[in-house]
Image 1 (cartoon, rainbow, N blue to C red):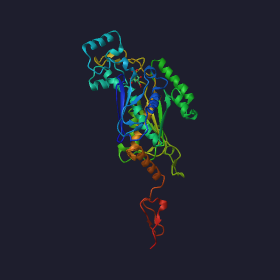
Image 2 (cartoon, rainbow, N blue to C red):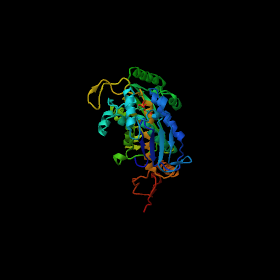
Image 3 (cartoon, helix red, strand yellow):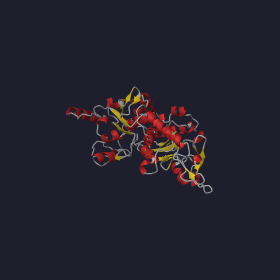
Image 4 (tube, rainbow, N blue to C red):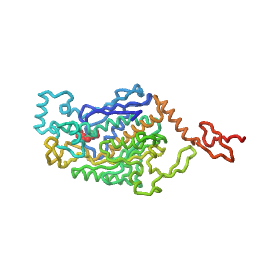
Length: 434
Ligand code: EPS
């Protein structure tokens, strides 16, 4: 990340989560309500557990970087309080434990309070083992508190700021659930509008497939199991020209893949036709270029590339698919081993968990997509104020709606063209005959 940067802080059961977003130009309208909408969307979805649906009501307070509803160009600090904190004040206490407090916790643990006891029965699929060993922890809680997907609430808050910036540029980013537990949406019957999809239990555009997806989640729940799936993110209105082929780290596809892959539960990322391209001949994959329309927009017959060619946005919608693994915490825990003794144990640790989070993962992926696109848009257009950014973007859009100047045009019957800087090919002035 270059122009737009963000960092998050906070433990899952600590007092709060926070995000600092830096690089947002001055003058962007921003109110907490815009952020609340995305935070609420992340909490929804059939298959979510008790924490998300009945305890937390995520709201972000804007603590800096905004005055009278407009960004100042300074860092924006966002704070989301964990409502569950009141149940964890002693377990997650910031100050050192006094002897009396340590005794109190030990007594609670002895009385069977799971929260109060150290966690040593490792959960496969989580950061438990590698994290605890890496940092030298004798209690897995020190790892799981930060490795928890609760952190993604702070990303969504940061992403909502980036979304506001993208909206000003005419860019829209949306996601939906495309698959759950092997049940894939059928595009032919995906007739729900965006509003209907947003209101549906799994945020899936295809009602018939959604019913079968819900059945898979119920099946997992009754087996004490969990289930994953696939989300799709679509970014529309992205101008041609974000990112570059000149260096690996300037490619937009690489940055987007990394951003989406960094979501804890994501195990794979595809663009457009993705892995399916490997099963077809090139003629059935490449998006034929049909020329420019009257407005100067380039026309394509398909969008199998998912809006990215050569690491650059090509003006088509950017389509990203993310593979969501099943939740690692199983209600019916798998056999495991103990962190301290290294000996096998019957069951891994379990407190409570979600069964499936594909729609929520899609919302987090929207946030990561927004943050990445906003960063690349700022790199491309620059600007300390929103007005400057919008001017720069409009100027570029206008420029690319015209043909670039030809480097060389064939001389007609001995006449070589005389060219002026900025000439389009249609403006080439034939050299005067001598
Ligand atoms: C999570 C475990 C659960 C999830 C949590 C992520 O939390 P808890 O252990 O408190 O029940 O609900 O996700 C959220 C709270 C959230 O807001 O997304 C984990 O271990 O990653």
